Image (cartoon, rainbow, N blue to C red; front, side):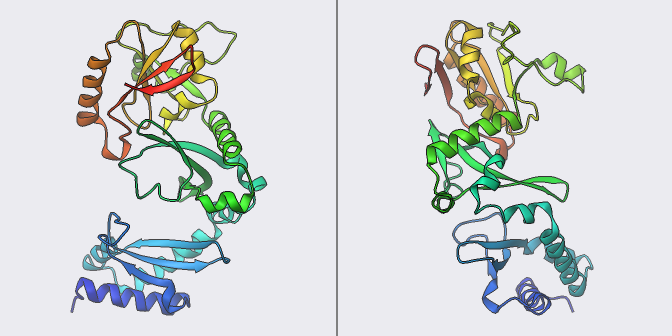
Length: 308
């Protein structure tokens, strides 16, 4: 007879306690509506590494229950979970996490990613970030590859105390790391469409006099990897270089976390840009890639960013 969802959760937890040898309090059930809210019910498997760091693996129980309803036995589910836990423990991601307490070992893996402040209030609690308007520049650490995907984590405030480093210095080094991990590039749409190997234009090369578009179409700024590429505008020297090539200040339209459109302040209408941004976000930007509805401005003379 098929178990109810509640019975499935209780049985799965009991089976995992026996299979892993974890203490009773180290496997707990959290419903999606419990604070902080999550995207689904989860079983949290916790392992205390030391007094300050706990490793947590989250299992999305509703997905597992669907597999059970489709014929996967409880024995198979538990065996798969245990095998995955063993694989994670041997992974580059898990091994690199052990370096988090040592700043000299982790500092070259620190980088910055952009998030919308209001949308990510819970995620940003106790994290290290700077704010520009409604954008948070958040400190992350690369954790390597896990199941073929790049893994990273947000750095919590208590890690700064552990490192005994000045926050400003850590943040500046992370911005510089981000520059070298994923250098900024300007992309021409027509080349993106017709050339799959197109790698963008290296406008930061001071030996080349790159010509930015000063018409209403603007310029697409991202990074070489084009994932989370909107951060490029805040990297060292980038906004200043664009201002010099543009011959003055410019507007920024963040169509997603992956890119930002750059427009000459002399030819662009900020009210029209705002309308275009709203239409673009509402029609084409996935919710998880949303950054802001605001239009930003860079003043070349003062070197400052502002929200219109």
